[in-house]
Image 1 (cartoon, one colour):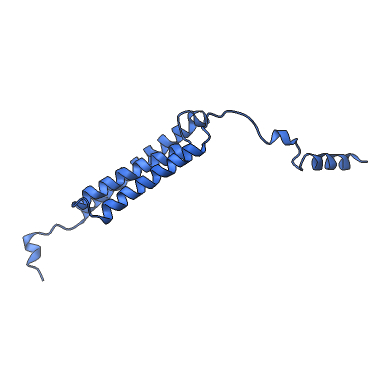
Image 2: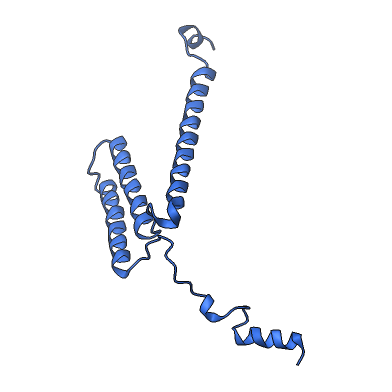
Length: 141
């Protein structure tokens, strides 16, 4: 038997991965909470409730003011994002040594800066670029 045959048969005995099967499953604690059936059910029930209430608010026209309805729905959406991150993505301050939370905070900061900057630029472009309607312009053909 040559060295090549030996290494190939050794790989075949180990599942073709080049290492023993016992290396495939590491029992280490990376700080991430692994979900249980109870936590997934709680997350699912909260998600359904946080979807059904805004649906009811819109379809039943419970709130007369559309702006207030939109703000309430945005509030429910924000709460639902947090529920998904906790119950389904298992994000907390300990997961991945805190790097997940740091990445989330950095992403939120970038989104807020981008949205605020975009709205600011669009508002000032609208007020500074649009012609002002004066009385003299209304009488022109």
